[in-house]
Length: 478
Ligand SMILES: [Zn+2]
Image 1 (tube, rainbow, N blue to C red):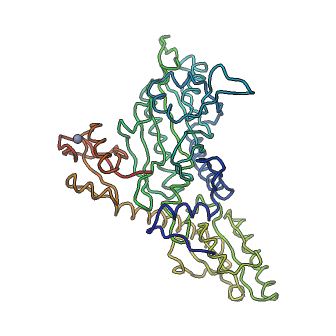
Image 2 (cartoon, rainbow, N blue to C red; image 1 turned 90 degrees about the vertical axis):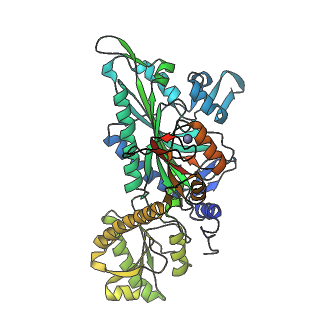
């Protein structure tokens, strides 16, 4: 490899940008703030997408598609919503060479247009619930952008549901929160904390927002998914009503929820190291890379034949396998490149491996060079499957240990200030927006989420010392 990566302890932000570019995940676009997702990055996104989509369908949801353009007047119907999104929207004023009668907004999110359609689709309680998800792109005019983390246009899924009662909407909101926790934990190998957002951090127009929050390698927080109980705000704005069993008109209760291409950024920042990406096997586009090693033509013949048998067995077992038989690159160069791209397992096959009927493996989850070992060639599929399971677990365990060792409970406000410089603080908070804003102003830390399970007890607000009923995580966030 031409040049070493910047060390992530030295300059996390430079390290991150270099990985995204050098692992071929994404590239800068000619339009400032947008990104080009390259095939390897897109395959990673597809794995995320598949993992979520399967879970949505298992919980009764279906996919649909709504238009990219939304009439400006729709956004204005829900006052908090327009206030929240107005500064960020891209507006189309001309089309076909003419000024439009009504400007169109490029969707920043689709509550409004979907609310408009639901008003027409819902008549009676028999039409409820509607459980629709959309895979789409959205545009939010961001000034400071970072590949995958914050881009003007990004890809995501947005779920939008309507229900007959508050209880059903709340149950749906929490069900999706569980789906996100399950995905993050088991597919992305990212340990997440979950809870309710503070009022200030609640989605514009929602009654309650829940989120999953993950700790990145630089100890900053990243909100990796949100699920909102919208109450009746959008139903009232768009007149989404139904006739109940007594033939009385009622407003519907709504939810919306989303996970975006930010999740790719989270995977990079949680698992990556100074050699590059480290991908959890469940979402890795390539799970095992086989590298043939030989010095002359006769070795090459034997090795190539052996490699094709091995790769065949792995693929038959459903393992996403790549054979790197490119000429003109040394094995060492290839090792570095696949380490950079985060492939969980490398398998080396040379004349010695062929003669001894075994394979040399190297795990990406272990420090470089520390984990080379052999597995018997006749058990390659079982062996690799077992290793991938172990790697998945080990990446999760490493991230969990890192996170838990960097969350502290401050005694007082002075200590909180110290903690959030390089970690998360879990502290009592009285719930006032003023304390929250002051803490943010003075420490740059925001409230991340209020855990649902608070246990018993009460405390004193870490800022104002008044009675506090709940504790919240404070951290600097992306
Ligand atoms: Zn307070």
